[in-house]
Image 1: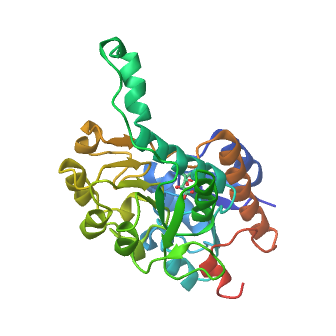
Image 2: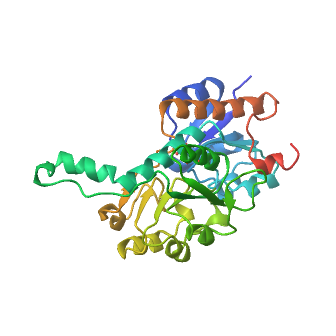
Image 3: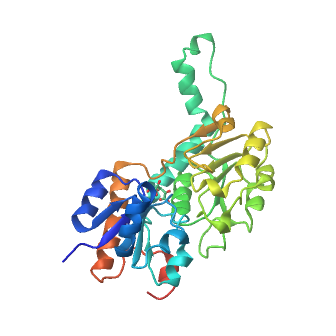
Length: 319
Ligand code: 8YV
């Protein structure tokens, strides 16, 4: 029997590509590289495999009449038009849980980095500025007040770690979590007004677009730090640059950006920011686990078995 045809819509690591090629007939980003070849292959493509940052709009899925399944290597799937897929009863899977530790670890690392100015102090030593005088004093993180925007699986992993730093923890989100001891605020602005660190770990997409706006940043205030390990779209990047430039917030640590991998020069030149290139889940162990799950969802679909990790919108259909 011929192997199911799969469109890979992201640059995947070799260990995932090798496994996909064993089980499927793979078209690697053909829609981006060779429109004519893609048009010829499109009628037979039965699945899309993509990453958390990939764009899978309706204009793409509409070209694939045989599409049966979309497997996302990422917990976030805001680039996928899930509504378009579900209209056609096309299930979508993602890779939750396996990356909770890494993203939470990075959130804590970024909080420490921006408060203690670790990248700046590293540069200070490398540039041999130490002999001329001590590095300026920084902000203490232990015991400070943390606000988490989005107390989902990763948000809770961040809270667990922050508790070990003696931080007080509050959160906002679509609704209050019953049985959670942390204080709930109904809006990001109300939360920001009460904390020293505001950590954003909510899904991207239309529902959270520019949620961290000028009002929220002003509520965070000149002593407050913003940390974003979610999606660049959640923060109004222009408003953030303005708040940083004018000292209306103390600093920011950002792993994600609007328009990444392009990062505005204004941010790259600022001294009160720490910038990382979307490395939240970027460890060998976690990317391997994400790859395994991405592959397992595809294999389960074509074997007629339930998907190991379908997105909640699909599960809500009772599938
Ligand atoms: C990855 C992510 O960068 O899981 C997500 O939503 O954004 C990241 O883990 C990406 O998805 C890897 O494909």
